Length: 410
Image (cartoon, rainbow, N blue to C red; front, side, top):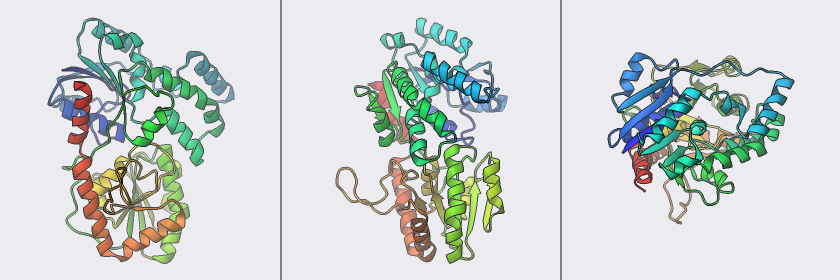
């Protein structure tokens, strides 16, 4: 098939830049082996000649467009009220309209009219602005939502992790209307977890929604050769994302001091690119190191005793959890950190599953779970082996790519 993949908001190479880029690139890599794929993207800092050439190894063509304005919207109370009114009138969030490119709009319209492609895939919902409802009568259109914007804001409000609760409460009903409207334009919707699908189902009870989970590049996240022992914790994530900032602050200030009072040699490495000032400040706490971006996150994982995923907000399957499991690092995670994964207890069909991670949702539970792993090499090995086996069987990019192919063939 001749596929057009819209990835305007992120240039999908290198795949190590972020979770969205990683998902898009790895799915492109698979689809490019079976289809003629054209990727449309804006020129940005990652769209260097070297990266474009590398991406063209996997796809037929890369179509680049001039960047849209990256200037932040004006701040202040009046500006915020203006954006709210704009949202109410246009039915589209200002953060989406701010990125609209007439050039891209015209090019996509002309491509559809010329029957240049057999299907269009929007990688991430922000690209929905270039899909017209009438396209459905002419060409299959698919949106890989990555995460429900309505569900994301709702979840942050419920978890107390919203940066601006008043604004988000006002936006929430408008976001529900927006998500329902744009999803109705598409032939098929892709969600990453059952929770994400559940967020969408009340808005779109009759929609075709398929789960295509995230995966792991097993060549990059190799299984560690040995258990390093010790009492070292690692917390991974892009440290400019609100849910990761909240998780790092919560764990470093409320959980780790309790761990350190019991295990005096314990250390915590907060590893991730673009740490904001709030995260950098955690580096001053006893036993805590904020690294920023590192040359090889896999090396940091291999030298860590336990990986913690203490998320309190944020929908979708967590790449950081999958990658830790692939690397063989035992995981202690919250319900949000382990979302979409069967790691203990019973599967939906009633069968039992091996123990693949330890679950915790409050400080004392984290301390107990981490303590169990610090003190038992056998438990660490059990979690390490069971989690890696699950990744190999269920969470590779090849498996995710095959699910994409099933959608396309349908």
